[in-house]
Image (cartoon, rainbow, N blue to C red; front, side):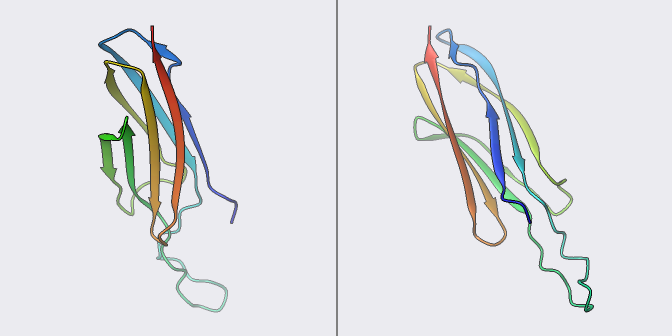
Length: 108
């Protein structure tokens, strides 16, 4: 399986009090747990099951994802920027792996 790669699109700057759109995508080969390998054994489920975004250490968006989520899940959401912000993104996998990314937004 290819290594998972997280990508985020965040504006470089925003006005104080401005609402901005955040776009995220993680390249991840999902496995539903329903298929079998060549020997007939079930292939273990491996999906991104949770996403969390924090801004300056405070959770601003989260989502619990279910088995019907597609491969390479894309999420888009909005946040209000009051001050310069450090955004942290985390995607949680069934196997305990956590894929992380981070961005900053300056206040103009």
